[in-house]
Length: 519
Image (cartoon, rainbow, N blue to C red; front, side, top):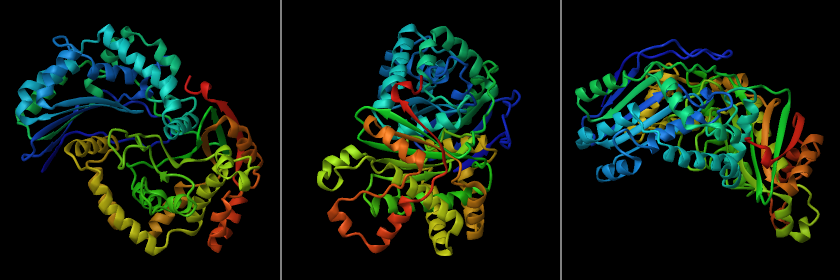
């Protein structure tokens, strides 16, 4: 395969709000694969949900969906589906905080038939009232109902970002707020598309087997897009004074979903990120059973399904086994994700004799254990053996990130966002040069456990008792059935006693009604 690159923009160091760069011509990134059967086009605009106008939170997402789920001036959305079905082509839009990406995938034999569709969607979208009403209704339903009912893991993650970025344009979900979505009109969408999706904030990505004439035609046509007039500052995540906990109380929750995090200033743009990747992988690589959190919380104590750590946003962690491209960010944070642990009500029903008087479930113990593990690895450092084993794994694992042309191209576009040519290649070279001292130094520089935000989505019956335990730093012994307790190894019993009294630097605890979130 051959890589062809044109101009790229160096990402600014994140020391405060950063202004949007001056107008520029669209950058072009090409990944030629002469033996490929498919062609992939990715159009990445630097205008994610952080660019939503105040009071119109959700406008970027709705606009992007209306482009790809609507029609063109020549074909309705239904006619497009009928036309494209025999081609097995697909296209979709994704919106994150700072970028919106349109992806088109089609067989090379259908370039001539498919390209008018691509051009029509991007240059002359139909924006009909019917399509708008349908998509707005779906989006509002997600913000008002689905996020609260379908996945407490995702609910807690979005609620954590609400705390981390409160008062900034990063605060709201990419799909917006209830009030914001309700206020959006079709006229807003039309105006926003004309002013926010411009040739000067666009990176064009091409991958696969296509003639040079196709690349030239695509670039020439997209020059017809207007200049963008949307400017959005990049926020810095807030650093709390102590540990701030927000407990979201909802009816009929089966467990407590815990998500904790704090801002860090390093991203893929900095070399320290590779060192943190090693530390993070050892602590809690996503969906991997060798991580320390997984081992201590799930394997040893059978408390939940999985427990992981992160050093950047992880898109759709419940369904993605590997990181996906299209979510690059300048404002970054580290986090701990504890999939729901049992609440007292459920434990009492399971073990009425042993745990009939239990007031609080496993959440405070699990949180203490996770924070303590991060604290310990910072203080003690990784051993040479753990470092070598984890680094060896990562050097192979990262190669799986780009298993398709679409993913490879996506990571190349994200590389441009961070001021790099090819991050997937860069990070392997960085990992190869790392030492255990580099990793331990990076942990102590970027990680800490005294100041963080915590969100816990839990049942109504658990919310206030849990708040009291955390606010007062009351000891929280692990709750076992007698038959389990009798078979515990001595080292687990000893560790349980230490975890139960581990002091969290909690300075603020609030209980929030689920109906008051994302309004």
